[in-house]
Picture (cartoon, rainbow, N blue to C red):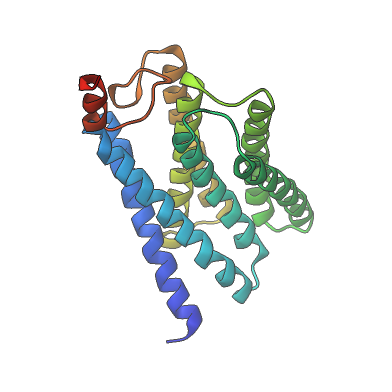
Length: 237
């Protein structure tokens, strides 16, 4: 087994864990499971996406694919920023948040530029890069705008967390789809999960922002804590 083969196995295994944990995280909220299931599955998802990112970089360079390198940055940013929105309950951005948002914004602009050049040369991958690049610039730019305004708090923070994590989930579904199915042109398969699942993100985010839907029964903007910890706080002095 070559090092590339070992990396590929790790990459595929990490992708499987990411997809499975994303499903558990979504179900835990929809079915009102104890909140620690959401926290645990979300943590596994971010760790798995980190492993996907770390293994994707050398695989992209070994295969000479700048396309996959840029896609890896885009996918990882969605999961990482969603995790940061959950962890940073105060909502005030740190240098990590500014840095990751700025890197994604820059990478998105590169994706758009490379995509436009590829399309001009008749390469269908350029459509995928341009679309994902535009999404990356839009999401990261919106986060940076919120950071500049003072941070992301309350219902807005929960809605943004949901948007970014579900965006990362779409990335894992996309990876599974393009790996196991083939159609022409290939860019249709790359973009199909985004087109089909993005309305669901918009719907859930709107419900969170309107106050008609809360995360695991918590009030929008409240600290994301397990029921056990919340009960201990309520019974304390």
